[in-house]
Image (cartoon, rainbow, N blue to C red; front, side, top):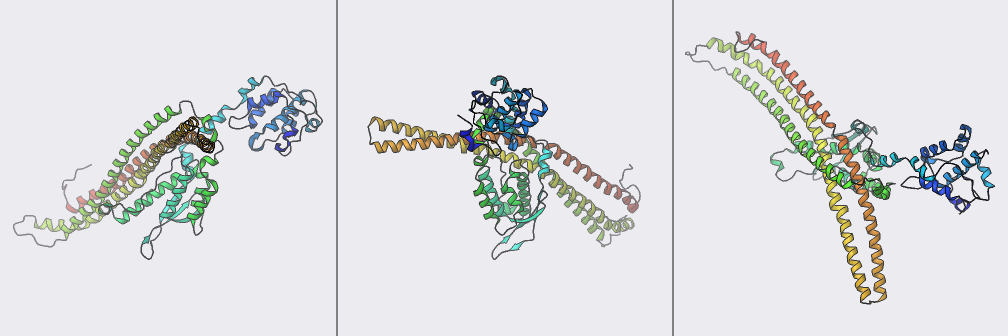
Length: 526
């Protein structure tokens, strides 16, 4: 085999060579090439050059003639580089022109035994493909999407809620309806079936909900859920760089739904576009199933604990709102009491003091209204800063649980069905052979078996890619775990601020009571 025979595959700038390729070249290539394809990483080639024991000038000359597009060398580029190294080791100028006149076997460089060169292959590169090198801060910094409700637009029969989305990353404002979110979620799930795609909130109130939740509260709750959804998506390490997400956050045309579907049709699902999808098995650890089972159980327990934390936080926020209502009503009752002008009977011994006291009570409703406002603010802080952060993480945890079920009920189940169908075909084939059926029917059955074998092979590849993605998404869940400190910080800060503001109003109210009513009146000195 000569390099000239492969000239059509040589990258631009690589001159055709006449000499035949020594077996050593192929052995070196097999020793140092990537596991997923035939390319050689530039870093590996640089280490190989160091073993050649050449002068810096010679190394620079060789590097100048080697094409390393995208940080990799092709197989033929490596062959050319090995020939140049051999020339330099012979004391000749490592120029490609010298190789054009080589009609015998290309010169063999002195680089050591091929098996020794395997150590140069960059193992971390293989692991990096499986590892998500992210921190929570980096994920949160990818984007923040603000979701606001626009004033209602009334159609002929129904009112429609429209949302304004503002992405910090893209610096653009777009308008979306719930149906746009619905289509976006649909195509996102088709594109990334093997990853955590958060669920959407329901479009309409469920039966029976109207009795406990007003329409306004439902719409606000849905806005919050849509905000959590789009922020989780916009911060996902793979979704955030996909054209679908960019389209949803930036497209301002008249039909975003058609644009989203068209974008998906052009790209297809992730298995079809991911460069290492068909080699995913090589990247998985041997104990992947055990790791998955252990991680899934741990995340299930974390999910249960965070649900309980969220429920308690919701109760505290609700109590703060109820406290605000009680304080306001308490002040109003004091005002009502002070406004009562009916005279006391003659037998009352406190006629003069009650008259003065009654006038003072009317003014206290102002202070209690301020206290009520502070308590309401406290409830909103607890809801916005604490409950929402808990719900964000819970949405992610629930989407992970959904992903695990999709893996087991989808990919694995389809694989088992395909194997069962294949077994039935093989039995039919054996029966047809024994019974000496017509050649045409036997050939047709053979064709179907070949097609089924191909389908099974594709399903196996998808199964391994599903596990590959599941492993990465598990890492993503653990990357989000430090959000616990964000939640605790928000909780403590809300309590400190709320108690400080409430305490300030109570402290201002205390001396007023003494001035208004005289004496200690039950007030304790502090």
